[in-house]
Image (cartoon, rainbow, N blue to C red; front, side):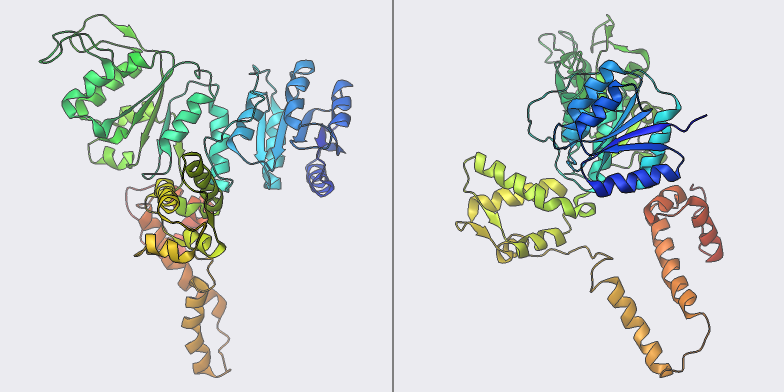
Amino acid sequence: MSAPTILLADDDAGIRTVVSQALGRAGFEVRATGNAATLWRWVSDGDGDLVITDVIMPDENGLDLVPRIRTIRPELRIVVMSAQNTLLTAVKATERGAFEYLPKPFDIDKLVNVVRRGLESPQIEDVIAGDEGEEALPLIGRSPAMQDIYRTLARLMASDLSVLITGESGTGKELVARALHDYGKRKDKPFVAINMAAIPKELIESELFGHEKGAFTGAQSRSAGRFEQAKGGTLLLDEIGDMPADAQTRLLRVLQEGEFTTVGGNTPIKSDVRIVAATHHDLKQLIRQGIFREDLFFRLNVVPLRLPPLRERTEDIPELVRSFLARAAEDGLPWKIIDNDAMDRLKAHSWSGNVRELENLIKRLAALYSHEVITVEDINTELPETLSVPSIDEKEGLSKTVEQKLAPYFSAHDGALPAAGLYQRVLREVERPLITLTLQATHGNQIKAAEILGLNRNTLRKKIRNLNIPVIRGAK
């Protein structure tokens, strides 16, 4: 049986070479070209078992090729790769029928795995026509963390699966929920949000499900709740961790049965909404404390989506700043420029308020400062008592500390160092506190700790055993 043939189109000769060699080593035949016209001719002739195409090519946009290929060969899976690493690129690739979207630069092993998956059991999927016009980006950032979010969102657009968005305050949870709605199949219907933390406990059920006239004191007429208001669309249950226990029980029943009744009503009303929940709380911790229902958590957490804090994606700060400056100018504020030192200062800040804090700062700088170029002195004035989060990559950070600790040892031996496995001894001294602190931060969850450390779970277990690190009982 002949090897599957992969059709590769990318105008970058270096990428064609690297991808072709990797796929060749994996046992595939590869035909590569630097333009869309040749790729289209191969596909039209019936060649190839899977397509990999770049977006920007000299003769045609690769995204425009996807629906054309799907029209004549709907069984052929298409992998889109692009250096235009935005949510819109991921969404458009998915909407037009791509099997997978990979932002550049990508891990070559990941690409090989995607190709293997694409060849296993091709399925004909519905193609949703994409919007050809340029649109304002709902989410900003090209960091690896944001790329993971874009790819997940793109896969969820055409579904009605419940999504649980977690993240610190200010990370943009409502923006993500709106993106799910605005680019999904319910985009022509209402998007309705309710913040559980902002509504008195006794009014939650009325706000969610509505009430009949006379249902309680002050109910002078019938009122539709958020479930009715969002009919056919998306309902965001923001700060779901603050929902009272009674309301949790009723919400669970609605999610299970697919219908609800108003407060004081008897007639069931069919629920037709896509549920997106969001919280800054650790719901699993609330479950252990008996504050949040575990069965409701499972209903909401069909697809978990964690938004990273800004300190985990500082490379996105320049792009965010440019966007916020442009928005400020559109609102009538003077146009500003951030100099390089000021930008470095912003990237060093801890951002406890995340993207919201950064946006508010930029608005304040645009409104209060008369000069056009914002300097590091201006930033320091607005962020006077900021504690920066040290990075393990900083030149004067962890490496410097290790050097300072080791220097006395070398000085004491004056060149006559004992041959006693110094490298392993130092490595052990660093590894033990690193793993211990990571396990403490994850409350003993070894799966999560292994992910943070970038280790295989079995490797982490072996290190815990060899380094005699105490294990927190009851944790995974």
